[in-house]
Length: 101
Image (cartoon, rainbow, N blue to C red):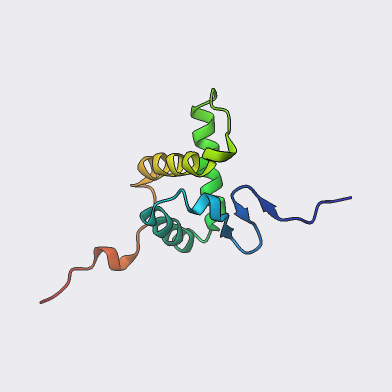
């Protein structure tokens, strides 16, 4: 029998809502970055967050998940992902417009 529950530790797949315990571990800048990149790339925030976590786990094979620190782990993973991909990710056009006096 297939599992119809679309919820996993990062959040709800159908609504693309980040799990509150995970969101509490992220900075406001990270949450804004996720929203911008989701729009720019046409991908769900959870897809981007999952990719960041997969890459982080691949680089920290010795790490063992601890439910109490999961939000902190995701924050660190996303920070490293943002730093690695800073130049590869499109930014909003408005970010580069010069304000005229």
